[in-house]
Length: 192
Image (cartoon, helix red, strand yellow):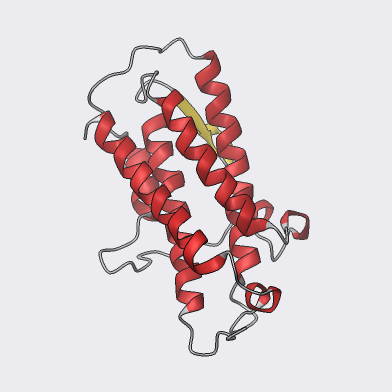
């Protein structure tokens, strides 16, 4: 895949996320945002609080690395590392927009365990993070996304190539936006 194709894929999914927020979620009531079909399913506030905590980590890590990297020569082609491809591949939705493999969120990123990450404004904050993500892609275009390495959120030792990180975070966002779409489609989702 070329660097341009990778960035276009990230932009496309991010714009879809923003479109969904503005058209389907931004006007929901507090009752709707807090509704859950059972005790094991996250509500909308929890979904977006989780995404925001994840975004906060990766936005800081990527911005910091880009600011201090010596790899300022972008390359036309991007090749994923085997670990990076396994990472983003595990997050990517199937062709039918289904989750192929389920994961438990680490406790620090799980609003069920870590109540401090809950934010009543999580949905609007997520939209802000998505705009930030698109703006960050302009900086990404100025570096070699194969040589710049980003630590993953659960280990400072394990690092992905920047290109793999972009796909990983974007597919993770898309996965949870699909979770929100599925929640809205639930037959018992409140009308107001």
